[in-house]
Image (cartoon, rainbow, N blue to C red):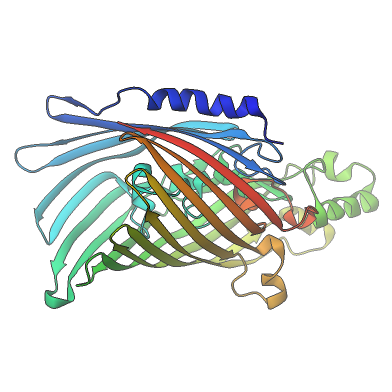
Length: 435
């Protein structure tokens, strides 16, 4: 049920802000910009990025503040702060803080906390006012990972080469470090945790590297891209869950232990629940092909991404007590793609549609790929309205089939135990004020 009081709670502050005169500030040639966004969501079945199951929830609030300055010698410095509340979690992060110098068209250097270039929109997710959609495809640009995927600490080399009649080529090559992720309540670790193992740390101590290439074709408005990103030897640590959080086959395993060793053995013996478990030595590889074409008031876009998790070792020492090997090889292969179209119907109204698909078992059998917990299909219908030049209101509805979004930022646990069916709807209402 959509509650009217919740709608008013969402709309009132956002629409009030839309009625104010908002503009960027400049202090001694230092430009200060930012935005404030409020998002309310509703699902007819599931909790996704908040308490959205049969409930309109003010589940996401973003506040962005950035500043830039260009010195007379051409050196540019800038930074951005990102504060957010997602469901029951909130945080304040430094999105980027870097120094940038372009020696010429072909060669520039950016050092510090840099934006992470990957795909069409990873380094421009904040530019909400220029897009019709309230949310980029959920699986391709997961909102719950926004604070983690946005940046890295290190060096970026970039530039543009003219290639004659073939157009031009933009490149970025980067390398550096990522912060380790700690805290079982962070959206990412809650999302990748499952019924058996509750992860509380992701060690990214071996850094990150990659490249982004975009070919601007001689056809005006058309560009094609390829992105590569490597995160070597990652490690995830956690503990085995107690029976009050187990579900499906994991709960059956705990029941078997209690039958063999006595009631409560899983929870209270100290040999199972609460003992360490994890996955180590995982090399993560991201590869993305992108395309975008702007034609008048139309924008067509599409991307295809593969994620490979390779060479890992899963470790559950407690299994040795049951006569099972405590370690086993770990790998996973995921596939994502989407196609979108948007149309600026007038100076104020935008319309859009995209279809997005992902499969969390790319190399599995047909039967495995068709399990609802291993795929999602998303038909998204969107409309935006520019209330003023600095305020935009958006609405979109998602016809969903499949449960993979719930494993990263929704009803968690063993999704194979969810019995409400694979088809569900999701409504998003968003207002953004930019300055």
